[in-house]
Image (cartoon, rainbow, N blue to C red; front, side, top):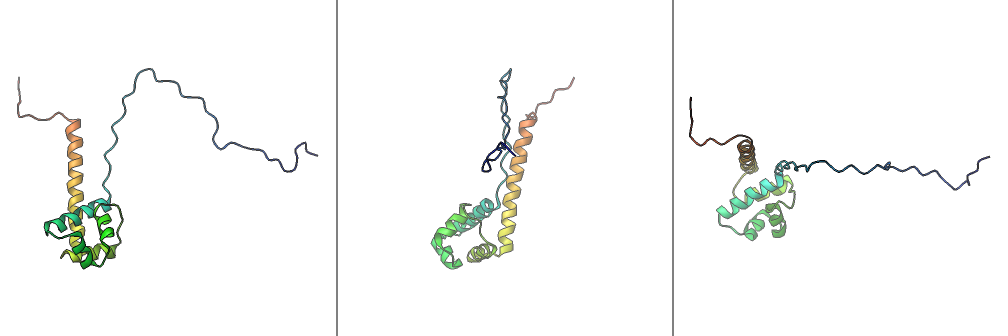
Length: 136
């Protein structure tokens, strides 16, 4: 016979207790966080807004032409909503673009963002060239 009552159970902790980490001997400089990869919804929203403003059209005008709500189109432009392909095609068509055109412009935006991020990374890791060269 067991000494435990039938309604008692053995409790096993999921996380073992650990000793506190020792303090570092010298201050550690924090690593620079890696640049954030752009989200598709941010890029496509930027393209939609840029195209709309280039045509000097209001948000209401484009939303009505695309048959989507104005608040939703605003959220798509600001990168707050992940729009479906049907919504993106309707918004593009309302701006006189095809879905392929919208995606191509979005790819250009991604390429521009990637190049600037790569350029920033290479200029911080190598010495800038200032046009002066000395030879012995």
